[in-house]
Length: 282
Length: 182
Image (cartoon, rainbow over all chains, first blue to last red; front, side, top):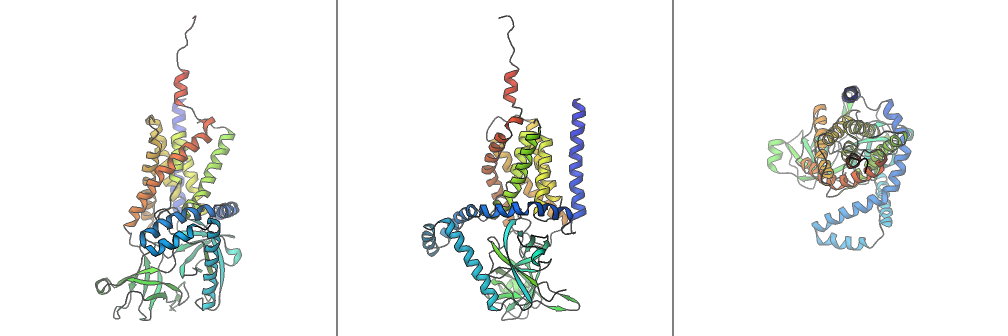
């Protein structure tokens, strides 16, 4: 009897391990399939409701984290946070959301979003828990006109691109994800290169140069280059703000032909984003 | 663990609730710039309370649901959390838990194991970017968070699944010899 139980238990364990490997082999690189779409559709309303319900609690916890962070930085932020502490957490959340929407509106009106693209605003409903993936889930999908490879921005600049879509949600791969590569240029110097992440540190991107003749200075802005030609083209439209050069030592520029870039968008704290749908692709 | 329809429903609710809570709350908060990961701790608690099979099945389910909801390649999360739950179950079957510190310490250790596992799966599938040393700091902080969250998860889960648990202390009490003819 006991031996039979042990055999059955081992068989189930073996089945689970083999099943995991089989799933990994079958689904890797294939994008979303029917199972994921089905599960996502079933749980999407529950996820969305939980996201909205837990927002005040999240803001409260994040508020503590930001407070500790700010205290360590300087006295000016400390004073501002003292004043902010007096506000209700709910009011703070509403203000923050309002500010994000205004920034998004400002980005629309400033002409940073190129013609032909229709921005669709979405709320972040989920985020990958591991340090290895820099993905997030948003509550707009193919039903809202979102397609795979659509660029995603927030009020500060480029955030990432859509990697997979279902009817009511989409997965966004951030520019800090290890699989991301963005063709970018530095303005005003015009130096072009490919922007890659440093895994585990979303505040640090590395711009590998293609042209090392011109010198790059700290603080210069980095935007998407949006090149096209020979039948291929960048996923991103030109001139979307990405970040600024944070570190540009002569040694790195000459020896490794790279500089460090700090993204304008805070990739750890994203609540509202805009997907640029349509455009000239396809 | 004694599985009835009621207990099965509770297990499913805990797995679904755990994954939803992880992606809508814990993944979106930051303490010292790191988000806690409660899913390995949940798998550990299942393993400690139900044994290897329960730990492995619940770990697999947690990983599968997580991959589905985040639209990630299926199987990676399942494999790592399955192993985490299985190892916790193996610990319970091999050793007796004498100290209340054992579950949180195990949550801490196995969360680190799970983080390394996620990294190993990712490296196995190909990673085309430099890896920052901050990854190590993030992993260690996640493990420390798991120590505190794991304790709460273990206590909560034990309470939720109490009717299904076979308490070793109760078994020992039942084995006390009865004096006949006194």
